[in-house]
Image (tube, rainbow, N blue to C red; front, side):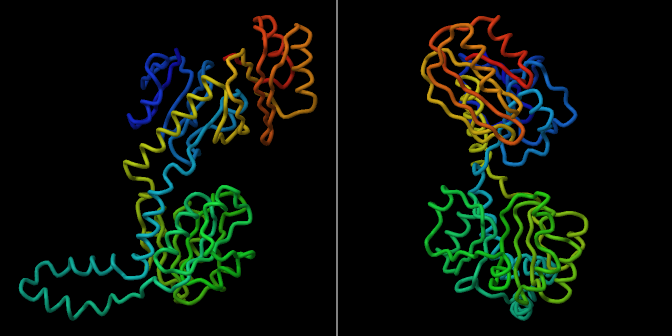
Amino acid sequence: MFKIQTLDKISSIGLEKLPRDNYEIASEFINPDGIILRSFKMNDMELPASLKAVARAGAGVNNIPIERCSEKGIIVFNTPGANANGVKELVLASLFLSSRKIVQGIAWAKTLKDKGDEVTKLVEKGKNDYIGPEIKGKTLGVIGLGAIGVMVANDAISLGMKVMGFDPFISVESAWGLSREVERATVLDNLIQTCDYITIHVPLTDQTKGLIDKDRFSLMKKGIRLLNFSRNGLVNNGDLKEAIKKGIVDCYVTDFPDQELLLMDNVIAIPHLGASTPEAEDNCAVMAAEQLRDFLENGNIKNSVNFPECYLQPSGKVRLLIANKNIPNMVSQITSVLAGTGANISDMLNKHKGDFAYNIIDLDSKITQEQLDAIKIIPGVIMVRLV
């Protein structure tokens, strides 16, 4: 019986993927085998010795102590793409919000609430202050063609826009799903110079922080509409403020408001609603639960942020799982121990990611605790488990 601790309210549709005959689920456990969470901050939490995996029902994992988990051989999962449609829909809505001055017009209309019979005339008189262009026929630049970027690009094509995409690291899966009508930009600055609208869909890293700065603002068409539904920090706030003053940026829409942005004109600050749909919450919970179950029962890893993706079809045989530091001669030391005990390997998978590696080993015979202990003491081995 596996014990699963929930640190946030998790969709019941997701938790149903963990059958009660093999899983006990509660918000409090002393020694859980797995944890499912959303936004709960684990950073200062003591990690139980029993903990084997953490599944985040969402994409961001800055609320999880990744480094400490890795050192203990705890696999950390996230659910990229599970909330993609929810984010995509908000991005599409924001294309219209950035163009048609809908937000500003609604705010102005509310100021007329005490004008009585004059409201209709005032509306007709004042509506010209909120004229904005249609998006059809305009060019949208999509920076980052992952799950969300591809969906945005394809739907923008369907809405009659011309679309240019930039992603030097596009995956094969994303490339297969991308419309042939999307023009490929090989240089980011070419996209920046060409487009009427730009939407950003890349992770925040040391390399992408301040991706849109004064140099790139200087390349943009005057009156650009800029959308950021990835992370705060991708756009330099100070440079954005200057670009708005100069009329380069007509509107900036972001799902990540901060104090500085809330004080700026021409900024539509949405309170992080991209994945705030019941469907997205259900999808994230289902994916998190299924990944956690496959790992606990079969040792397979999919969508881990700290260990490599590893999948080996369950064979019904004894399965040995080993996590270790990515250092030379680990595989030979492990197989030497198994050979010395007479254990026969029927199938094996070894992969690494950064500083860590993971092994799935199917054996034709049972393995004793003494044999397991011999593997555990190999320098660099950080986790050993049988399923």
